[in-house]
Amino acid sequence: MTDTHAFLTSEKFEELKKELEHLKTVRRKEVAESLEYARSLGDLSENAEYQEARDMQAAIEERIAYLEKTIKEAKIVAHEKKGGAVGLGSVVSIQKDKDKDSRTYTIVGSDEANIHEHKLSYLSPLGEALMGKAKGDEFTFDTPAGKQKYKVLKVE
Figure 1 (cartoon, rainbow, N blue to C red):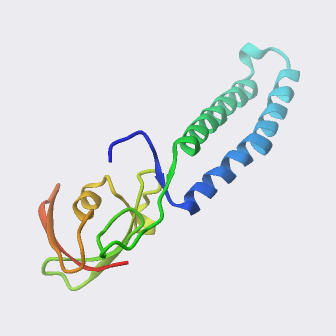
Figure 2 (cartoon, helix red, strand yellow):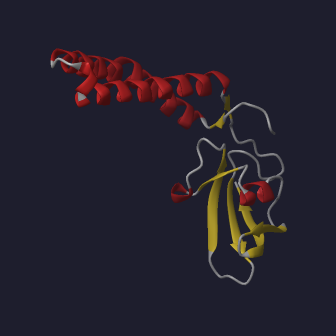
């Protein structure tokens, strides 16, 4: 699974498209107005407002280029229930060995990963270890604290 495509859920894909549209229509105009105002202040070599507006313009153009590339190359993932095996889009409940609490994660592409939202990249150590596992499977993976043993409780 190591190609140049970003794996995204349809929700994240739509979110990126909205952000791109906002940057192109609203933010570009705002920055252009800021640049115009800063130019009107005179000497550009010592004009902090002009330099700040130029930096903002560069950051926005960089983000637009990134979003356009990501959207163009994105592969939309829809979770398919194939025998209950963990794959992109799966919602997985796991339990650490000798621990009472379970944790639930959604397996996503790396652009969408957010541990605070329990979205785990399939390329992360835990995500890689989970790929292809089914309910009841036990697995181990390496962490900075050493090998950790887990059990898959549920795959949706």
